[in-house]
Amino acid sequence: MKKLRISYLVLLLLVVTWSDMLGQGCSDAGFCTMGAMKPDQYYSEKVDVKLRSVEINAYRGKTTLSPVVYVLTADMTFSITNKLFVQAKVPYQTVTGNLGDTGGLGDISLSLTRNLLETKKGVLSATVGTKIPSNHSDIEKQNNEFLSEGQDLPMYYQTSLGSYDFIAGGAWINEKWLFATGIQIALTQNQNDFRWGQWLGYPNGQPHAEPDPYIFEYPLANNLKRGTDVMLRVERNFRFTNFNFNVGLLPIYRITKDEVYDFDIDQRVKLDGTTGLALTALLGAGYSFNVNSGVKFLYGKKITDRKVNPDGLTRNYVTSLSYVYRF
Image (cartoon, rainbow, N blue to C red; front, side):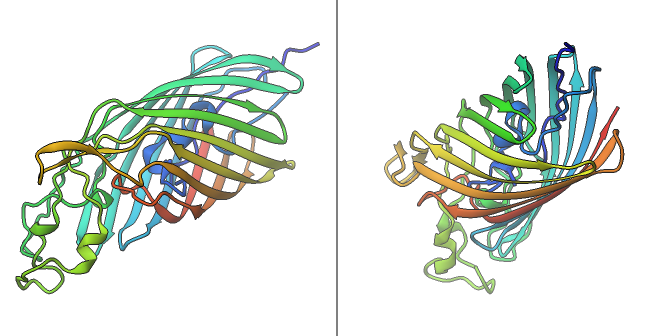
């Protein structure tokens, strides 16, 4: 009996992120699309050779406020052996919204995935990885449009979460189903210093005694250390000769509170309302031009979210389109 082989493209994208991909913005965090945890994975019982792949992904995420997030990601997978794969994900992110526009290199994701068990019924795999920040989440307003030149923008406008993260997870995949789970732990805090009182000129560039009420909708994230996230992905895939489509759910539960620096009392505090469930419904489709190349589309819609989101990851909906080439 011929031994079953599976080859991973690793990652769709957050990037449904757009980590929310979804409800919480996974894509942006990269958590839900790393290694064994990524959606719409390539699966084959016939391929018995090592494959390498490059995936270019274009993502758009609409936040719950005015910012719209665009991410272009190069996702590269290298096969060390038939069972061991390395993934590197390099995103370029831009944000446009009422407070301004930003752009730059996003957080870089690196992961190692190994197939642990291969049977006719499916493949069990595990992933460990890290997320490397591209900056400290301290991008500033570059003009004096709202009398706020040189002041930090909210996290919704930042191109990096500003922290080093540890990521681990695993998945069971077969021709029809994908079950994946994972954990993301922020190891460090960012250096964001957005403050409401620094935006007294919004929205008309004239000084006011108090900030416009809209400014208060952006949560403070001063020296934010995000809480720990646990995720579960359930996906049903329908595969045909060249076409496939999939539906799924992506619940992400933050099990510990976010922590920030409160400059009013000069100490760090844990924020109420930052734990709980962010749930996203997913719908995707793919088309293979040949054995080497294909395209994928993903749509994610928020079902429920946490009450307080200082990390700026919350999304109403996300879409992504990617092209993949396997060598």
